[in-house]
Image (cartoon, rainbow over all chains, first blue to last red):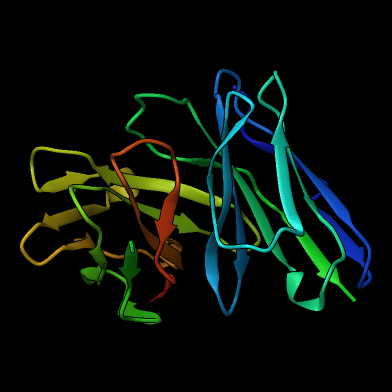
Length: 114
Length: 114
C-alpha cells in the first residue's frame, strides 16, 4: 500500500512569489492535515480537511490556504512568500471519522524562500 | 489551550542503557496521546499511542510509554537503547472531540552513544 506522497520534495522561491504543494493520502484515507516544521517553532498545525471541508485551522495568516479534492488529494498554497515561510511542510493522512489512531506522514516538501 | 511540553531539548544515553524521554501535556478532557519519531530529512513515523486502558503502552522498536493522568505525563521509555534509536522524538496530543488536529511538543533529540 503506497504511503503519503508529497510533491515537490524540494523547491526554491523568491519573496513575493506563491507556491502550491500537493499531497496524495494513503488510499482510503479521507482526512488530510498540513503542518509547518521549522527549527525555531517546531511542528505547527496549519489546517485539516475531511471530505473536501476544512475541519480545523491553525493560527496562520490568510496567505496560507488549502483545499481537498473529491479523491482526498489535497493542496496547500502560500501566497506572497516571506523569508519566514522557509520550512518543511508536512502532510499527514488518517482514515477519518471515528478513527482513534495515528497520523501517517509524508516525507515533506522543503521550501526555501530567498 | 492545548499544549505539550518536552522539557529536554536533548537526551544523551549510552548504548545498552535505559532511556526516558519526558512529556507533559495540558489539555482539557481525556486526550489521545502519541509519540512519533523523525529521522533526518524524513517525515514523522508513529511509535505508539494511548487511547484508553492500561497505563503502560507498548509500541514499535521496543519502545513503551507510561501514561500518568494525575501528573499529566506520557514519558517514552526503552529498556536498552540502540545507536539506531538516535533521532528526533515528538510527543503529541489530540482532543477526543473530533477532527485530527494534533498538537506536537517541540521535540527531543536523542543521542545514543556506542
